[in-house]
Image 1: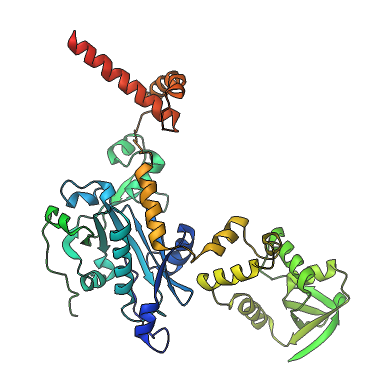
Image 2: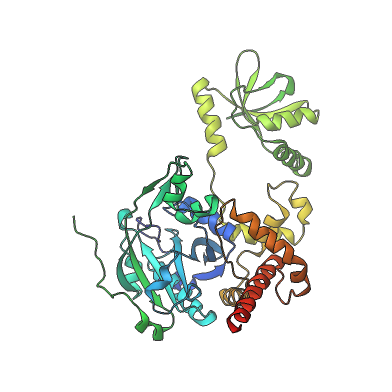
Length: 224
Length: 213
């Protein structure tokens, strides 16, 4: 999910194009990614299951980060005969407004080329949250395939003031089965979440034919 | 702006000061003053029976410790509300470090000052400092290739959810198989996983034998 960037960009340097070329992706620790993303990304969190974290550097300054992780549990099933190890999900992408225009495309391009060259991953998933006004413009600009709205996983309210993801509830209580938890006297409610736009990018183009869901035309923001 | 050296006896800490550092932070401040000297003036206001410190309450404590007699102070003339607001402003208006630039700075400092000495004044840990010193030094290719190797050899999880009644049975069976697992460990460093594997293998072999009877 990309943190929305709403402010107009100033080029980082006298020539935005040269600044764009100077952008570097360098691995950073999850701690550093968290330190950067929690205060700056609109979701203010770093999801569990983060596998890869990369920093976005310009002239030695750390001006953004992107992370890849496990994503939805059965996300890989949209591709026939895929296994969970064939895919990562782009879970966070945040860039400072100090970076020049089109930095998102540049960063995504570097990241995808690196994943293609240095891993055996076959495809990457990404989600955009329409309830936050996101339609995946950056994925559209980078020629990802749009596969419609994914069915959203509900969150769980067990009365502790926190909405739990099914994975974290299963981790803490051993199950996210509402029937089981209710039978054990726990008052648990499911809180429906809005569906998200799902995009897929094939690192191995020969796997595109295995896609088990339809490719749709890109969603557009409705004009007000 | 009036800067004047005041006798330490006339200075008093602000009772409303909300900044309450723990002992570790005070120790860093103590070390900083010892290494670099007292370089920041206190900010005070006159209250009739002495001077109240708006900024520098912790430094005042340490100056007393060091038996300093006169303290350079900036004197401001503010009412109660403005004094409190100004103190908050002094404590909270600052930028955030850019992590990339901070990493470069730390690497530069580490060339001449040992980690132990740095940690006497910076609120960091040895691990954090080492991590910061290596920030921005790796390559994406090396990082991804290592990750690829690691995931190829990683041990897989097989997660079971068991009731309180079921769990002791499984635990007992695994415990009984543990000595055998230690002998037949193979490449896996996980004895309990190997024990479960041997139990299942034994069951399947027995099932095959039963089929042939």
